[in-house]
Length: 480
Image (cartoon, rainbow, N blue to C red):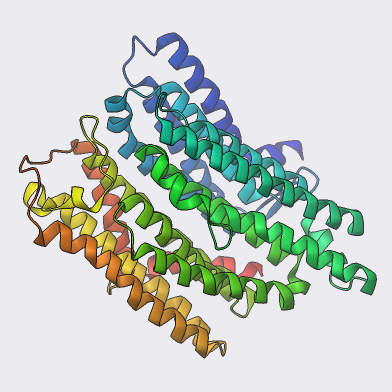
């Protein structure tokens, strides 16, 4: 039995060992072996990915007395986290060297944050959810301030830390209500009890539900818990922003699904209304604020808020299995697009010059046509232009809304998508139709450019052949 439990959490154990090995290797051999922290980090991510691919063929398993749950959804989410982190670290390597950031600390903190994300995706208990959330968040606070002497980074770290601490407190407060009512930490047991709670408990359950949704949507960056997103994106180093904009989003999505779909399915009459309101205002506010941005990192931050709105819209669909599958497809496509977009920013940020503003992209097509083309694909995909995967993801959500009778929401989402296309197309216009301020050609590391090309190629491939991803997600439909 213990061996079965250990096998279930083997990816988490692998990354735990990886964090220790990277830390000690950097301490003792960091000066003698170049890039040892980076090499070992990528090696452990490859091992974890291989373990997860093997795990996809296994059966559902509840481990450690109900603390963890391993199923197809868990493995898909964990595989996405590991692969996206692998791509992000490829982009970050040259940037970290150029800025002389402490490599060992960066990769150890990132690995610990990834470990927290994996714990959060497999959590089947209120206790494991909280442990995973803190393990995900605490290293991120340090990562944001890793660039010493950089005032914006320190400010971003403080903002994220203070708001994150409040969100964690709200989560614990909501969990205490649920535990007090049900007497259980196990999500399945909680779900059974809350199927028919007493009238006296109903109001408390709804309050606890709102508190826990607040924490999950804070991590996702939905309105009105979005205040940190543009400021933290802008203030953190580009390498940290790329990580922050991808890995934690998948983990936060898993947390929201576990709480709502497993612990509170009987309260769907309430949480679907909450998610609907959050989705509508997130899409509106995210697009409205993005229209006025000249800083590309802030623009992508507000764009994130809008995309989160689409994910929340997907979660209100019926039946539950269809909602989770549609939202999961959207989340996977979004993190691929986000990683690629920030990857381009990192590639262009050379010789101590951080590329952040739209003006920095002026005439990029003349300086490096290939990088400009990759950014073109990413922006078109985010705008929802066919046949790219961003279009397919939005199409699935809008079609789902129509099929489930939410015609007004479908029309609203369609109109907002058209409005959003403006600020994405503006980036393309600057790259292709404005004269560059600097005529010097842009050269990128071949390995970094290859990784970015693969990342962008996936965005195109999954748009043309969405069945490749849909087939992977289909078994998840049977879980709900």
